[in-house]
Image 1: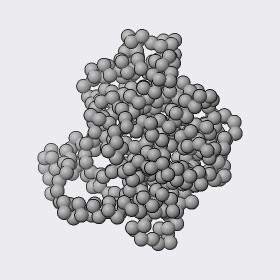
Image 2: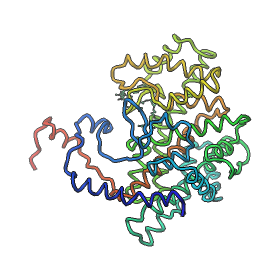
Image 3: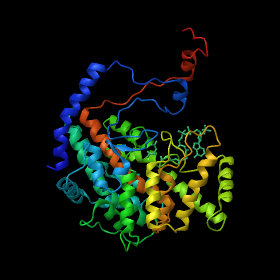
Image 4: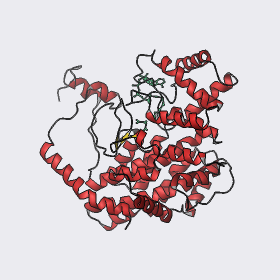
Amino acid sequence: MSKLKEKLEKIIPGMRDDIRSLIKEHGDKEISTVNLKQVYGGMRGVRAMVCDTSVVPPDKGLIIRNYPLKDLFEKMPEEIFWLLCTGELPKADELKDLQKEYNEKGGVPGYVWKVLEAMPKDSHPMCMLDTGILAMEGESAFRAGYTKGMRKEDYWVPMLEDCIRILACLPELAAGVYRMRYNKGPRIAPDPNLDWGADYAHMLGLPDPKGDFAKLMRLYLTLHSDHEGGNVSAHTCHCVGSALSDAYYAVSAGLNGLAGPLHGLANQECLKWVIEVMDKFKGAPTKEQLEKFAWDTLNSGKVIPGYGHAVLRITDPRYDAFLAFGKQYCPDDPVFKTVALVFDVVPGVLRQIQKIADPWPNVDAGSGSLLYHYGMKEFEYYTVLFSVSRTMGMASQLIVSRAWGEPIERPKSSTTEWLKEKVGAKEPVRQ
Ligand code: NMX
Ligand code: MLT
């Protein structure tokens, strides 16, 4: 048995009892209210779901299982997945065991490549990645177990198995998408001697003489791993999983949400915006030129990608981490310097627009310039990197949800007519 499974087997009964008695003793107590604006406003701030893997306080940013992000910058993504699932960082032998499991359970099936090869050559890399994951659904241990009949208490076991299989395959699948979509030559085989992040960097095939790109990959995969439960990708994955759809269905659904420009796709949009500025001004712009460009973007009805957040009210600590990496490894890169200049200018512009709740950069504002520096110039691919990382958060949330037996998600919706009556904007209709 894997050490991760062993560990989960030890902690799950206590977690279940804890949640059961909490609901039994306090189930009727109110923890949040909802007003009309929130109903029409994307449910912002409504506390109506549970997620134990991480929290995002608006004034602090991501905290994974009580560890502020700044304490995790040096950790391997594999350690983060263990932490997300169990609440503790793995010991050295536990980390090794998880890495061994990834090596043993990897291997993208040949039919997946055939499916991807049959897709239009200009397919978006996110569509290719999500299709690749979904194509593997026939392998699901969860679906097989459910079809045969299994006890609810055991659901988490095949869910863990499916999640490990997906995570083990993802770097190879994602790197294969890159090489196929951008005609980079044949796929590069995984190297079992490398860790998860370094192996992904290796299979992408970009030159990395000093190993700095591999360092960036590890950091990238750590930073994007989770962002509590309410973001579009995690929430979608969670909702689909609550119907007892297996991890292949749920993860690919979540990633389809990540592919939206207001969510994960903002990283491609962001670098596109920076390159447009640089093209327009034939190099790094001045502050005045940048300010005008920002206003032109806003006045044409577009958002400034990489800025603003539904929850955060500070500079995203994930952005800070990328900025620090850039300052250390590529301080003179012109694209990186422009990204840093955008940070000096754009919050001042956005602060002048009253409706914008958060004028600060989010995770997507800085990452692209670093990828660009290391030779990954295909912006449309950037959300795939985010996806490989976010799958850790979504997978851990699926495992935890099945472990404590979370029911199917089914909130109550209302019609506008009902809401009008409820708030007294209209006389009740006599039936
Ligand atoms: N540029 C222009 N307008 C903005 C921006 C921005 N960066 N951020 C917010 N607004 C607008 C927003 O569109 C909304 O306008 P309207 O009422 O006309 O629809 C208004 O300001 C109020 O929005 P907020 O309450 O500040 O933000 P909300 O919680 O609704 O949305 C985001 C959050 C992240 C969707 C929004 O800030 C945004 O569109 N940012 C740019 C896209 C982006 O960077 N997304 C990535 C988020 C992180 N991620 O990886 O997922
Ligand atoms: C995320 O990482 O999911 C984004 O910052 C969006 C969010 O938290 O809503």
